[in-house]
Length: 145
Image 1 (cartoon, rainbow, N blue to C red):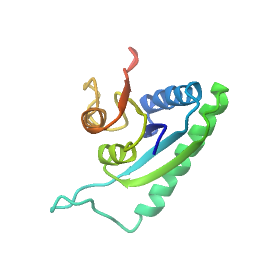
Image 2: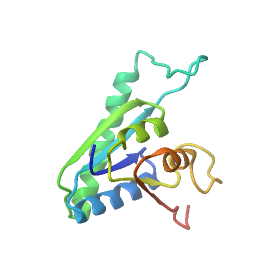
Image 3: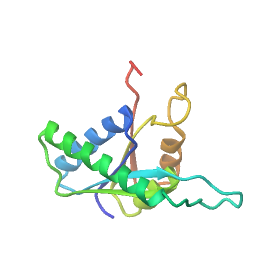
């Protein structure tokens, strides 16, 4: 999908990435896709596990991302050509790389909701930067983080 993809997870870092992605999409007169991933786990065979409540949790994640996106668009006062908010169940780095096929750019925060706070760049951002076939903008963490 062409345009800009931004991965969000409800963290402060992803909100900063969302703000930047909205500004970039508006400045470049392109579409924005906001993607949130309901975190899956791998089963013993390496496949993504699915549980009965996954669809409901994925939809709740989409609703939260949509609410945050609407809030940020209103606060910034800029509007990309179009904004699509989507949620999927899977592994974040794999789903973001998949969504970025054909995109112009992916925007991400350097650290998200998971992982060890001492790491300077989260494993999802590292994997997306390594495997995405488009430009990847990774915003650095604030000094206060």
